[in-house]
Structure formats: structure tokens, C-alpha cells
Image 1 (cartoon, rainbow, N blue to C red):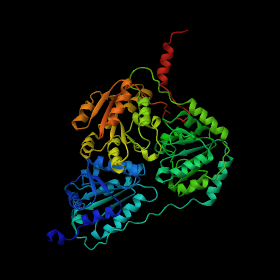
Image 2: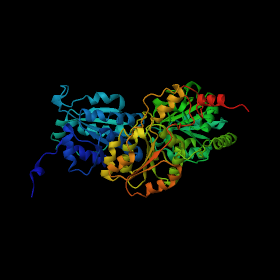
Image 3: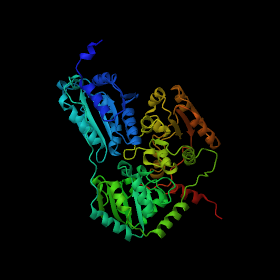
Image 4: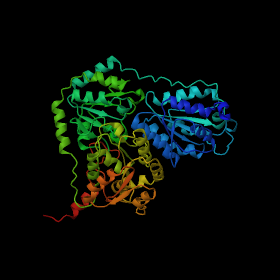
Length: 573
């Protein structure tokens, strides 16, 4: 029997759910409210999976993690006013790290725009600096064009977030006349010119001390395999940025490690001595370069990037190779390099400067724990992390065989990123292990998403490093603010084990180094989500460290002030 619903016109919200399905969207992360309720009503009859988060920031960061892990477009949804404004940090994080996202926000009806109606905010204007594009839908007939353009813009060129602000009357309006949605084709970047590639090949052939500097743009350009072929063909020593980690698998013979503020000595010193720097999908970020005027002072620069605006933005490129990064790398793989003595010297220096894990004492040594964690998990494990000391320890001591296996907030440095990003990664890759490494400060910023993990039974394993302080802030206050410690004390943290168990998630607490192996085994034996609460020394620092506004060759291995004090207090021989 036909029902009344069978004869009702198709609404704008219903058309939108069908358009999302046509774009390949399978999952949304969101939180309902007044002006987005028609869209949530339409979700009841759609094939889309909706993950109800417990805070809109969690929705944006989960969509962010979904996109980073899968390479697909992540989608988050919120209502107008505070719902939309709560998305902003997650949108900004995606923008600065070039993550493709569609952000759907409810809005008051078009007749009420500009009247300060209940929960009206100009989210279109608020997000303009942190999106590739913003759309405010004013006519229902504009929906097909806007949705096509939004997804095309999010995917094309340098990816990024796009906002669609949806007034309530557009959602409930009659869309029966709108055509079925057809996604827009994505235009690939043009191949670099033959002339610039020939110039780059000649420069590589003549260099005696070349170094490859790879960044996050390698994964964005789907250029991991061509990048590896380029490195292996030329045998040029290679350094990676924080977001480039995994572009070469850990342990690769040409990999010197991460460069920059917390990079390896071998990586930083090779760059500083190089005579040719081949930059692939990196942007000369200040945390990677240190004092820019003294970065790679003897090197000519070849810069490959899909975004032509990044080339020569901070460091002038001697050879600018703009366009399809993968295509450019395939051509450069034909280059001949005569750097075997240099490559061997860099490898010797890397092995000489390798980190040690035999710290004295019985307390848990975070680098050793993370190294062990990385050794016992499958190679396809995705590790997400938050921001702070643990983030740098993960970068330094965990092993990655692909950039999409290491999800970290790079340019924005968003505390609270890790837990919702792990949710998104697990939803997008349900058959792969997902681990969150967090710190006690970051963990509390989106701790409410434990409820989402428990509800969805996402089998995320959480390793919480707890030093009861804001560790990175404390380290900087120790080194650069004369140990004038200000507002870093987190000694009144809750009992994280008990807190996690309240959400119905198994948890365990360890304090001794001897407990690490058994605790990790117990953690990974859990079929669903689980947490390992690890107490570590509040005085532990991340080494090495390049002080701010210093050249990368100026690397500290310990606190110079304490070294001086210890020397002055030493008993003369």
C-alpha cells in the first residue's frame, strides 16, 4: 500500500544525502541541532553511516583522521551557531595540513540571515581564511552546482576543506526537479616541463653532496612509489619532515631520519653540508628549517611541488619543478648520481648518532616503550598521536612504512587531535589496527570521545603517556625561561584507568619498565578498545633539540645550564 510519504516531494536534504552517496561518501561524523534537523531526518532513509560524536570538534577531527588515513574526502556535520563554531579548529587543522574535507553546517532560514536570529553565526565569513572555499546556499537550484564544486575543490590540486552552509529552508524545500547528482571530474596537475626536468637531472649528476628532503606532499600526490624509486635509483641520502615520515620505510638504507627542531643529528648535519637539496612536496616549515637564512647554506635547491605557490615562497628555488609530483619523480629517476662516498659517510654518521634506549633506572623510558610498541604491531598499523613531547617521541622512535600510517597534526599542532583522528582512521580502515599515543594534557581535551569509541566498539588501542605536566611547555620553560615554571602542573589529573573503565573500556596502569612487555601484550589481546596508562618521569625531555631561531647545526642533547652547573659542582680530579 502507498503511504503519504510516497507522494511527498523530495526535499533538499534528501537530495543532498543522495548526492553524498554519489560522491562516494559512506560515513559522516556529526552532532545534530535545530537548523540541521531536516538533514538528520533525511539520513534516516539514506545508506550513509553517521557517527554521533560528543562534541563538534570531535566530528571535524574524526573526519580529518578519516581523510588522512584513507585519502578519501572526510565529511563532518554540525548545526548553526555554536555547533558550527565548534568545528573551526578541526577545519583549520585540515586546511593547514591539506586534508580533503566537506563541512556541512546548518544555518537559519534565508529570510532570517543577518537578523541575529537564534543560533545565527556568519560561519561563511568565520571560516573563509581556513578553507579552500565557502558556500552559502541561497537557492535550492544552486545545490547541484555547489555540491559538485565543493567536492571537486576539496580533492583537486592541493587538497583541503570546503564549507557548505545550509539554511534550513533550503533543506526542507522541494528538490523534486533537481537532477541526479553526477560528481565533477578532478583535473590532475600538469606534468612539469621537459626543460626544468632536464635542468634538474643535470644538477643531480653534477652534485657531490646531494640530499633529498621529502614532505607531506608526497602522500597527497599519491607519489610514494615514484619517490621510493627515485631514492633507490639515485642512492641519494634522504631526510623527511614530520608529515613525510613513512615516504621511505623506516630502516631504509638511504634514510637519515627526520630533520628539524627534533630531527636526528645525521639528518640535520647532512642538510647543512649538502651542495644540492632536492625538495619533494615540502614547504620549508620553520620547525624543519630552523633559522631559515642559515638552512642548507651551501646548497642549490630543486623544488618539486603540485602547488606552484609553495615554490620559492620561503627559500628561492634554483630549479622550480611545478606540477604533477609523481610524473616529475618518474623522470628524475633516470638521473645519474655519483654520490656514493657522500652517501656512505651519511650512513656512517646516522649509525654513529643512533638513539640509545638503555636509560638508567627502573622508570618507564618513553622512547624505549614506543620503539618496542612499534616492533610488536603489524606493519600496516595506523598510529595517531596528539601534540607535545609524545608526538616528537613517536616521530623519532616509531617505525612507519607509509605516510598514511602516521597521523599527526603538523602545521597547527592541535592538542586533542589524536583521539577523534583515531576514530576516523578506524572507521575508514576497519580491518587495520589503530593505535593512539597521547599525553595526559592532550587526552583531556577530547576525552569525551571515549563514549563514541565505546558506543561504536571501535577497537582502538590507546597508550597514554602521563607525566602529570604539560611536558613540552615545561621543557621550554626549563631551557628558555630560566626554569620559571608557569601553569604546567597537571598533578591533579583524574585516575585515567578508572575514568576509562567508567566508559566500559578496559584499562591498565603501569609504572615500572619491567611491566612494559606484558602490558603491551595484554593491550593488544583485547578484542575491542583498550587503554594502557603509562606513568613517566615529569623531568624527561625530548632530545635532540634545535633552539628556536638557531641553525639546525646547533643541536642540544641536554640542558646546557644543567651541564654547566654539574661541571662546576664536580669534584676536581
